[in-house]
Length: 118
Figure 1: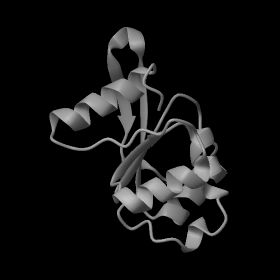
Figure 2: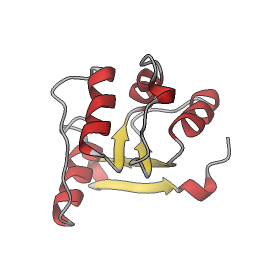
Figure 3: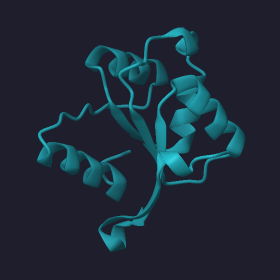
């Protein structure tokens, strides 16, 4: 998520507040994001659905070791059922749908991994 989006800044600050690390990408280049996930052993990622779809199109991503990923959060736009199902199968981690607005100072509603059943 971009830092000008409430999800991006809120999620980043939340990680810092808990002693975590945040990997920021200067541009949305899917192969670079996949490599950053692998190199930094990223456990949680927050993406818009379009980026999730782009990550799935990186050549060989299905065979890459992405076992560090525990959860992908997504928001900012709707996600198609087929995209969500494919992403859940490909990345093998939990998915959390976040909904909120800048005006509400962050996430208001989440759909937790247990409730994802596309």
